[in-house]
Length: 298
Image 1 (cartoon, one colour):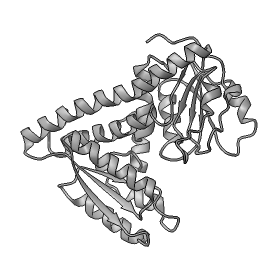
Image 2 (tube, helix red, strand yellow):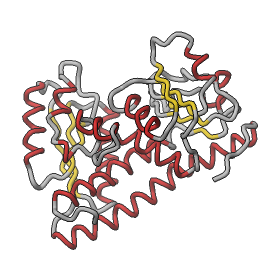
Image 3 (cartoon, one colour):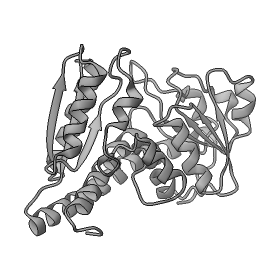
Image 4 (cartoon, one colour):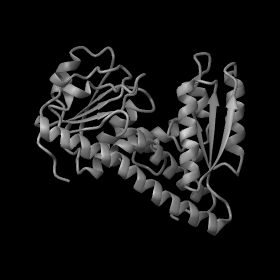
């Protein structure tokens, strides 16, 4: 698609288009995923299955898991939910994930986070078998993604790249600034952009002169979890702005109202990136099931 000029009116059109593309692209991916799931079920007699694991009863996490279960049902993917008490230890959680990894009836595993400060999050993630890591959170998934090898991408970064492709944004040769360095969002987003020949700069909460770095960016990915950190005055005119942040009150990491005046393309919160994350998760669940059921490429 052709970029829309970064004027106030043009940016509003771009916003509407990109926001709708996030939702419509996710819908198309889910429709195709549903067809593949139905075909796989008919061929093998087994429906793809995603296991969701939730520690505690954080309201946002409960809502996210329920949403993913609903999407599974609509796509013809069975889901198995494991709810654990907030007091669950790292050892207990690892044991649960080990059992799911060994269960042939489970094809993909999603461990909802956050999961409590008392839990060793990395140890928990690493208990997920790489072949079932459909959320792309393990060391193995990060390595295969970084080296461009077959495997699973982190879902939100993977969804971002699909969205850029949908809107005709080629990262090659562009300066990309990723604000955030989490292991499942910021770091993999930068690696995927680097693999597409962007020149990538990582910034974070301790970066000096963050505004100056953002002003040089052709593509900005905001993924630090600080509301309205990225201000419109710091956005390069015509830049592509991807807001992957989510803060209480449906507020992103980008000061939307001011950034939309300068960006050529910008994703809204909510919308934009969020639907793509779930679509990528379910698509990778069907991919994992196809491999495990001996129908790779189906």
